[in-house]
Length: 324
Ligand SMILES: Cc1cc2nc3c(=O)[nH]c(=O)nc-3n(C[C@H](O)[C@H](O)[C@H](O)COP(=O)(O)OP(=O)(O)OC[C@H]3O[C@@H](n4cnc5c(N)ncnc54)[C@H](O)[C@@H]3O)c2cc1C
Image (cartoon, rainbow, N blue to C red; front, side, top):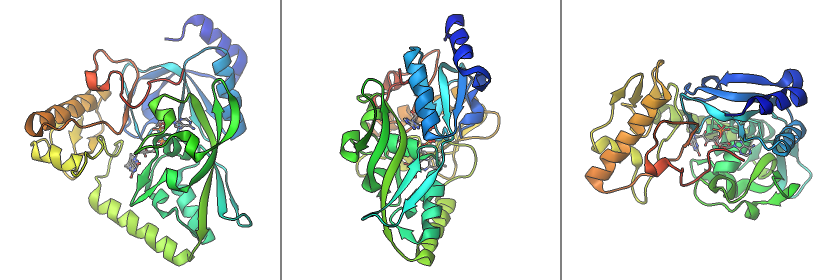
């Protein structure tokens, strides 16, 4: 918890921009999560860099969030200053070779995909299926329909905690499947904006492909408040198939349910607590382990202060809870 001294410093530095004791449910697609000690909104890459630099200088725990579409935040909340990233500028450079798009890290991947379609630029149609921001996608190497962030990324404007701000080449982000060095905790950095490579294409064909992806999503994935896929697919299998075969499809806990449509999704039916969601997640993992001896790995991040976290989430093998 940030103490009174820390809060007083925050008030002095950020003035009316500072919000205190803010419920995170409104900032996460699962619609659960207790209060963060403090919250700031950044509306440009410059403001994001300036805000995070000041917080690092003040030695306070910082967590930058995009759409909150890959997070389960505890009911007890988050002992950190949360920075909500609304920097959303997207600029296309048709004269460069290859053609590039510079997107601020708070831009929605969906909007990048759709904007490129309007320009007749191909190669990132898959991005229109991702409900998170560019920063979240670069952090977690988001991907869909055969596309993946690291395959389009040329470089990123990055603020590193000790090395400062510079343009990093894609290789420096140390990508693996659905993870980067930042997510694994080996790089302490915040993404400010990114440079993606795209190519000329046919606007109508690109839009048609995005529509095909949208319909596939609608057919395969359940509607409602969720964080998308809870677990990664293990090699040569599907997490959803395993959870279903373990008999947990449709299982309820409080206001949460393992989706009857796709068992790798947990849906908040309206009144779920974060604990309900966590309980179902743990039950699904235990059932799959008991029946098939497969240890599922979470795709989502579990953040905040919990009474008890199972060993496989504590610490989360793929991330650190707070960018300190
Ligand atoms: C319905 C649904 C469908 C989904 N489908 C897919 C899919 O097909 N493929 C896929 O890969 N994912 C999918 N997801 C998961 C999610 O959308 C992606 O992981 C997305 O990239 C997360 O972005 P975000 O902005 O929501 O990140 P958040 O959830 O806000 O944050 C996730 C992590 O990224 C870090 N982060 C965010 N921004 C920055 C930044 N600027 N600098 C440093 N760190 C940052 C945060 O600190 C946090 O640790 C889906 C989610 C939902 C709800």
